[in-house]
Length: 582
Image (cartoon, rainbow, N blue to C red; front, side, top):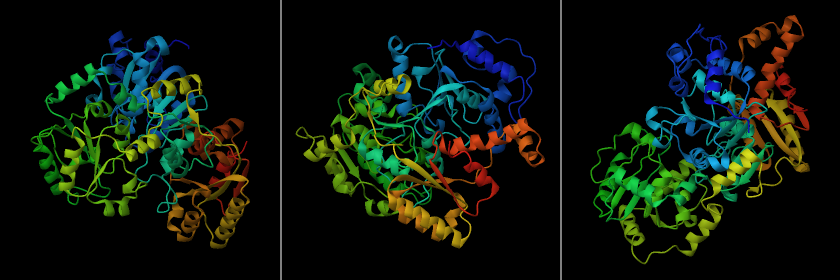
């Protein structure tokens, strides 16, 4: 692999920022060469204000990113990571990065690891002071520059809406859990989650921990009939941290949390309730439950959902341990003798340990109806608790000397954790970076059939919509093609169209484009304004480039064998459709 020095990247970065990057870019003028320490920290006084300041204007963000996307070359030694929109350095991207850094003899040391992170407090001590790891804030120029500079991108959720993967970039999406709660496109939401879909379709590689989650990805994120990348069942790299935690690592964490070594340790990790706020979330019940746990003769750890911490300060709760925000959850699970949760997918991470789980689901009927769940109570491994009394009894039974996993528990491990053996990170690295798929289970049949896209756009005209949707149904009934329907978000107000898409269900994929204004460089914006005046081949090429990049933002590398246009499409939708087939 081509060697990349950190100084080389940052020197190039400094030179590029002397001039404007898209609309609103600041002229930095001449600056003196920074010292080595300044380079390694990616900071120097002359660029601090413009380079590290978050760009608040959405239009300016798109312009800056578009400019970098068109001018900054990707480098094979730069890897860009992001977990949960930069909220925390965590999850499978962290496990992959940690594996690479821990084994330079196997993976090489000539890489620059770039992390999107919300604040310095979120940086794990493991990464502090390293010359080969740098940290950037979302929506800053340095974030956008290094996102386009990276040849490899690894994320567990969604990148910004303006993100467009360049053809020479590889993008791995590991997602961040197993779909115990409904995800993406469902009967209640037939248009799906637009940003999640476009991120998945742009990914070149997607991981799944099991066939159950594979089905969720294919249906919920409209991948089944549209995706042309690679999807592999390989296990979640983050669970390696739980399974491979050393005695020394666990002891350090015990001391850090001030746990009593003579006592068993339990963790309570409830999820948030959708739509609940400070005034209608049942904090009174939570307080009662926490008090009951605090009175037990155990190390009781409370792991609140991050939205809970916005509404309540839990750091001073008596009798409970509330881990600091930089605590690695998967390492914490390795210490846990018993897990209590409700509707959080954290229990899937705990399953491979074969230890007791209590599902405290006092509001199951209400929550299931409001949010949607994919597993019934009898499919959950462990004890079901509907009251505080049930909860305390489940804890007592789980911590008893005679407890062992039931046959149903063991069956759940086989169903949900078949690949979690402590080596998922190394398998993913070999596959993503080296193309070695010998140790992953590739999902077959993706992109194998003829692909047809029905280009609906805004779906205007009652008679035209009826005929268009009839053609979709006829194509589905022929069962010789993978069928995708592209619509604008505005069709959500048309009950007839929404009902038709709901009725078609998983027989089609639906890609819904939000009301999104183009991302353009200054040159492209000018060319677009002059498009009707035939300004020449160069201007026309700039104008076309806007649409080409927008198509890639929605569909990535996917091309269709046939494109069926709605009869009432505007110029915008017709021109965008021009990039849907080779």
